[in-house]
View (cartoon, rainbow, N blue to C red):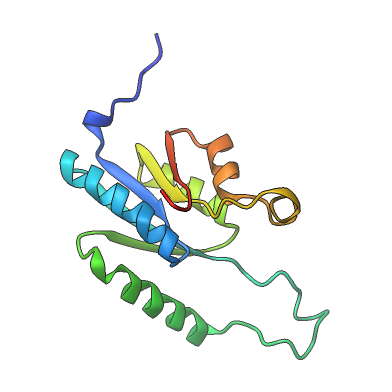
Length: 147
């Protein structure tokens, strides 16, 4: 007999954010669910490292500790509307960091936004939401543009 997830027993909800207005909508969905169920809201911002090797591309600026501080401050300002949320910032491939954080918390639900790209841009860029959905061990609620 497998364990069936129950939204009435949510203890923690993970919301990955790219600090966009669309991710704000996803956070609001998650906040409402968290408040209704007395669950903890976790916001995660993943900084993706540059896709180049500074040894191969000399002269290209390399992120520094100051860059990390600026990103952290931007994340903290973005999250001011949700003072009860636990903030997490990581560096790496977004879908991998989201899945790892969901496991570490542990999260019973991931709520995330998607930009809804299709066609060539989706094929070239890929979808973080799609990768998370395919590999997540917990349910994933995806908020699309214009929801």
